[in-house]
Image 1 (tube, rainbow, N blue to C red):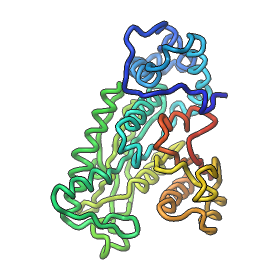
Image 2 (image 1 turned 30 degrees about the vertical axis):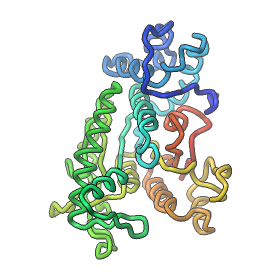
Image 3 (image 1 turned 90 degrees about the vertical axis):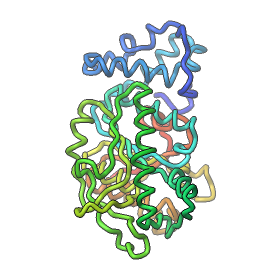
Image 4 (image 1 turned 120 degrees about the horizontal axis):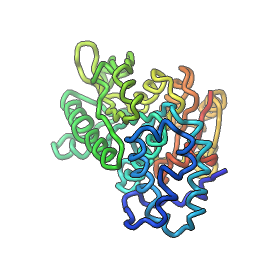
Length: 347
């Protein structure tokens, strides 16, 4: 079966003209796509797939024989069949958000996964962008236990940056890559209803999620559009709150009955030894991860991510993965190979 080391993926932003033997690469000849008549019957997805494959594999594919190119794509067939038609929630942030090259890699992955029949929901934060704009306005960022202290002025900046700038930028990139993205926040369509955090006196307008109504998302994902969701929500009175993006992704995964929740982060995943990057735990169940937390092996910023995964699994999500967003095409490695790109937690 295809492993991480056999994928010849490179930068997703360069396209090659006069693509050799292109009839062997694109929809009519890819075995994985022949198996999915629903995709072949959808003109948008057929066109989208060609754009996505060009974006992901075109830069280096010209150096491989035609048989090798086809073999690489055909070996993804079992994974495509497994996840076709399933909902996958991807939380985006960390290093993958800061680097333009990694950002392009994530976008190309999303588009390809959508084009082969997966229902993708993309949830994002935007901490570095928020800090940048706070600095321009002379407001010093303030954090308490890893959470942004959000007064009224900061909340206004958070909303403007996440909903108005970051969200629309990501939508534009996905559309340019060949898919159809729709930008939303938790406020739209009552998607997320917020309530004040228990530490609201110290944190200000940092909220928890009181309820989720995914009605506005279902027509979008059923038509293989990609909702791009900014982690801002409002309470019943209309007051806006800053919501942790991991938490938002986990609750959306539960509400949508997702097959998989994926959190992109700045580390390799859960480590048996926090000081040894080579001690990655590839797969673990809820009981195991709770023991690691009790033993102090899961600590710091990893605790809320693990808790988010455990909560989503307890509500019916099949698997949750914490993967290395610094690794190019980490989403494809996680979904379309046995090797994966981080730690997968199961129920």
